[in-house]
Figure (cartoon, rainbow, N blue to C red):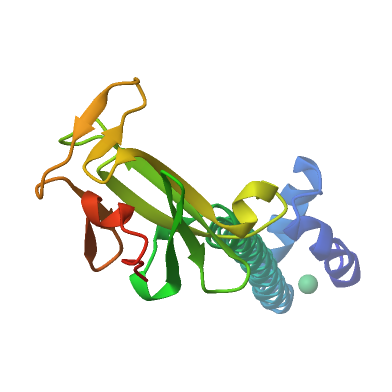
Length: 219
Ligand SMILES: [Zn+2]
């Protein structure tokens, strides 16, 4: 084998593309020719460094892909978190605006007592615009409504017309010392018969007897 043929075969030899017979002949030539032996070594080193370089490039590309994927994951997570937060804020806002009711502040409630014949009407009205009141009535200690809690709520489309004005609670008297109960029975009134109206920070007490006296209107 001459030097030129050897050199032509070197690239194939390095990539293991040459036949066993060719390899054998090349090795025989290398043993005799220092020049070709060194040429092969040089080419091998070059090939090796190029390949290492290629590998590094590929690794870099993979790293880049990983980074892009991780960035996308973060983006998606951010979007999902934002949407979730927005959703929660909307629900909370809706709740605060339309559903929530709270025990009314006494200062926000206008109370009037109206006597009409034997009937006394306690009326409650919110002093604030766009608010209405709700009442919870209880017969705690007596057989008439003796305890009530006044709630306040924002007015919205679901507010019934009859709540927009004021809420009333009515007591019927037979005379100044006798209350007519819902069940038709009579109740003799004493100075212990009181009505408690609970507000946010205070409870107002009214003596039932006082309600009947037309001159004793209270605010
Ligand atoms: Zn040679």
